Length: 319
Image (cartoon, rainbow, N blue to C red; front, side, top):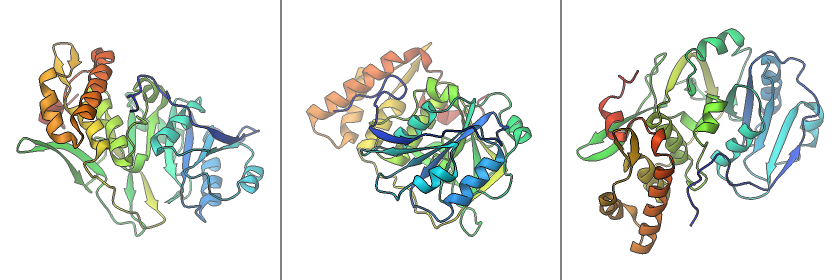
């Protein structure tokens, strides 16, 4: 059983790196980019060219598969881009953690090679506007390949006594969301690291993403949408897999079982029976997983500012 990580980037991934040997001479932003490459897209070269011209300080390009094509030509053309190739299976969140550890700027934009990034979609004035009040995470408006809206806003709620996550395609500037869609957002790097980054024990991209977002809210941070930046996909995208599997079980224990008691978070021992009925695991495995979650909450108990019940009841009103 993998133990819930207690520090940022706790599990190290074997990887190969083609180092960026030069500084981006266009650099003028206090922000860098993590580019997630999955499809070997035909748009990758013009996409990198555009990121360079926008003035990002550092660009880290991460292959989601070690089997992607040879990068030597791209590395030669873009000597200021750092290309990272994992040599073992890793979750998307783990690879983003690696990217964050390679970067020194205050803010980091995470994007994918399945996006169209045309023209100067960001500059320092826009970045300063988006990062007013020092938010943990700012999420751009995302549209489909045909520039149509689709559900990218997540809100917590309940259906009877059952927790649920509602989605909406209605985006307003400053609108709160539980987490970014598809990991795509501008992150405050320092806060990302303080929050512990993505949990490698959660393998589902959807629940891994939701876990960090929910944790950020429970620990007093905020995630908001912006309409100042709109990014369009270049390909049709699949709906996320929201199955209630072991990944959901991890999310459930860490974020929904914890209660806020006066000045700290705690998982009541009595909640084991609630968890056990939903875990889908055998008794011994359920006991181990529950103990791991209790230990993790105990280590971080004074970082909790609220619990899931408070977050649901006060969604849209948290200052």
